[in-house]
Amino acid sequence: MEYTITNQANYTQINVSGRLIEKSQAEPLIKEFEQLNNSGNNKYLMSLAELEYVNSTGLNLLIGMFTQARNAGGELVIGGISPKVKKLMVMTKLDSIFKIHDSVEEAAESL
Image: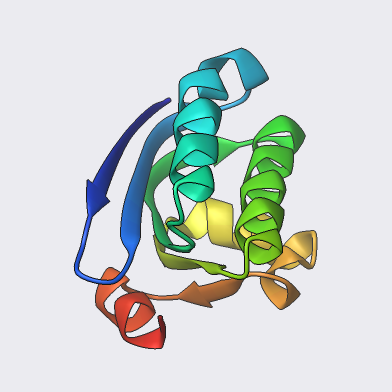
């Protein structure tokens, strides 16, 4: 798994790519996200368009980040999602929790 974080005008964009299957892979992302959240950033757009695969560990990571953002009075939306990951979100009914948009542009407009 790889990720990039970029600050936009009124939100922080997180792009995740590769395969998210172990918590140890995501430790740097978790730490960086916590620092951002603690510094007052609370609006996030996460692009999963390049995420090839995610398992239950990866889903737990996404849920944890979503919860942290919400607890800080913010929001985490998904903009762009690969078909495999979208199918998994629907099967697990996580699409009813996360705001999922087909594109990064649509998600940015919702923030």
